[in-house]
Each structure stands twice: as structure tokens, then as C-alpha cells.
Length: 65
Image (cartoon, rainbow, N blue to C red; front, side):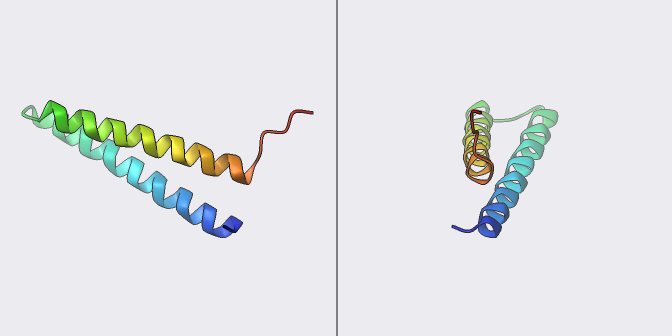
């Protein structure tokens, strides 16, 4: 996977992460929401965050000097 493809994937994952955050906020503000659905969305957000971190580490490896 080349650097441009990784950057595009990071961008797409970040967008999905933001969309999930907005959806969770909207559900919670509505007052009547399915707690299980919100928990699943939060879990998905965490998975996305982990995937974003992995891809960023590929671009900029943590080198101990």
C-alpha cells in the first residue's frame, strides 16, 4: 500500500469516525435512543480510532533514537 492510498484511507476512516460521533450525539439529544445501538456505535468509533492509529504509524514509524 503506497503512502497516498494510506492517507486516503485515513481520511475516509476519520470521516466515518466524525459521522458516528455526530450520530451518537443526535441520538442522545433526541432523548429516546436505544442504548445498545449507542454502545455499538461507540465500539465502532474505538475500532476506527485504532485503525487510524495503525495507519498513521505506518506513515510515521516510532523510531527510538
